Image (cartoon, rainbow, N blue to C red; front, side, top):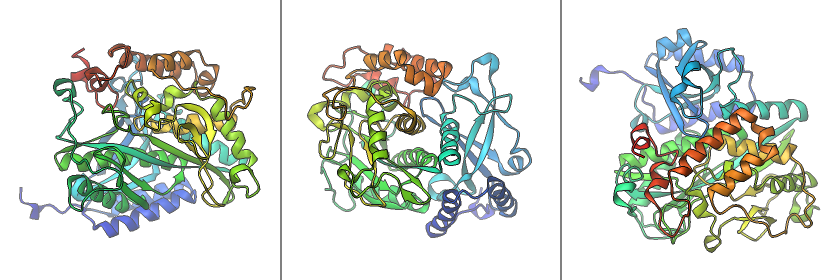
Length: 476
């Protein structure tokens, strides 16, 4: 069909940025959900060039799922969208498969037509159980409810910013072919901050940054990382649910750009032995009435008493929540002290081997950095477990808690054991969801070699939650 016959929405990157920043500001200012919904429905009705709305949600392990709804259908049925939850890992059993999708109208995005297709807009959804309540395995909904409760009860706004590292490899679907090839091929070996203009890694970073900017990410800096073919593209902080949504979009954008370039963007924590792995350093703070509650010019390292209490609670829960922050077999290769691994359950302003670091800050930027997070973890589980632990957790009576030499697990089996026996993880997730999550991680672990060894094994990639599909899974 001739393109001249099609009249679908395709906006310039500048127009996209304006629209996305306006929506982001509404979300930040907590504009009434009813007002936002009315505005979005009116926009969809009036904008004739939109053909479909992509609704996004995440499963229990953090894998992003997308459904396209015809716009006219969605306008009539937005409050009665259903899908089969039994096909989603960690969701319902087959006998109770029907779930609903609610629309979070505040989490609305305009995406570049040249990468996501013309005539489409994107919005995040809330998973709703048959009775109409929040679905317990939809951690985005759990995080959203927790953040709203903290704002209502304490006036807290939970803030987060993530530094997400990844690798760029030759070829499309390089992870899915790893069990056949046994290797990844770099596209660049320049190293930290070094990449020539126009080379494959720089082209990938530049293109990804352009799309992020257009989608309202408010970029800060981007650069090649320490390892060959490794990248990091940083953007501004946001309220915790919006920040977690941006992680999902960041990874989606990276994968889409890489695929169009004939490459693979990988967020495996340690895809190659012998070079630095990839992390997702998670910077968090709490504000109230626009004031950063973690800042105290007279506090130790300029961190307030509330901030240090938050740190102590996170350190106390370190082993309990390790499986939530390091969610795969491969993640435990990264917790290797020879490569700046944050495997010590301590807090430090300078030691990059510490689980928690206290960066230099001021009244606007003071924060706590949780360094032990893998980039393949469910971002909603990461945010929820860190903030829930930091606000509501207990403080251990371990002497010199912030400096005591304790270590995170070096394998997923120990992490699973710690997670299963922990009373705290039961409190934050509930028995049912905790059991489902542990069973999913056990199933992946049981398909892999128990000892990591010095070679990345095919099964730890093949059965990774971000890589698997039914076809690969059934090849066990």
